Length: 257
Image 1 (cartoon, rainbow, N blue to C red):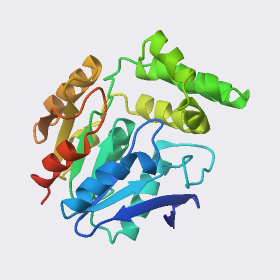
Image 2 (tube, one colour; image 1 turned 180 degrees about the vertical axis):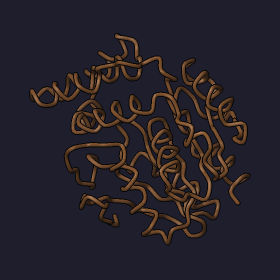
Image 3 (tube, helix red, strand yellow; image 1 turned 30 degrees about the horizontal axis):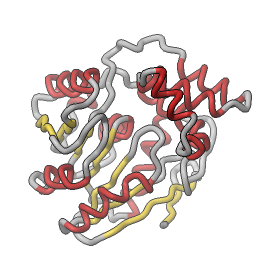
Image 4 (spheres, helix red, strand yellow; image 1 turned 120 degrees about the horizontal axis):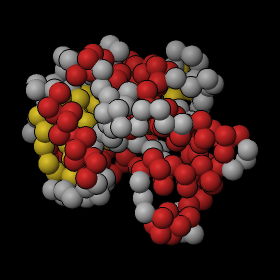
């Protein structure tokens, strides 16, 4: 992987595959750069340059306290600079929230593709989940932080939460416990898109799967209503808050300028 340095000195790891117009893939909770590799490969096959990123606190990237959403904006700006300052972005879940927030803060993405951004539009106002997650991490209970986020942040049914906890994959989630504190902090800070976010000048495409969680359907529809300049697209191959590489690449390729 390649490395760049964010404004606060944090090391940010990213990888690229293919040539052509770069598309930065910004994942959501529990995702590392590796999770974006299938989409990056599909983009490369379509003639683009797929760029996967380890957000701070994940994978090959470093971390610097205290966390603020603005620091992640600077991380994306550093990656964009390494790519020559010209790239589109595909953000998924909290990564879509971050991508739109970064664009509103002046990061010059050529186009934004926002996949199922979990905007709560104020429904989680006053939530203390970030603080409770951080307390569990500080107490040396990262496993419980992962479970809490899955239960309350994602809304998974309790049997599914317990099934994941007993599965072999759970061990790979535990090292990401600190990063879900950041996801919860970010999505609470911009639970409702700001006026600057809904007024970004770059072309915006909002993507969602079919079927997906009802609250994400509502979030996408409300964001589209708040951004009449944006296009809302259903990707039928994507299911249950996942990203289908082929279907998503098709929609990106048909719109990328």
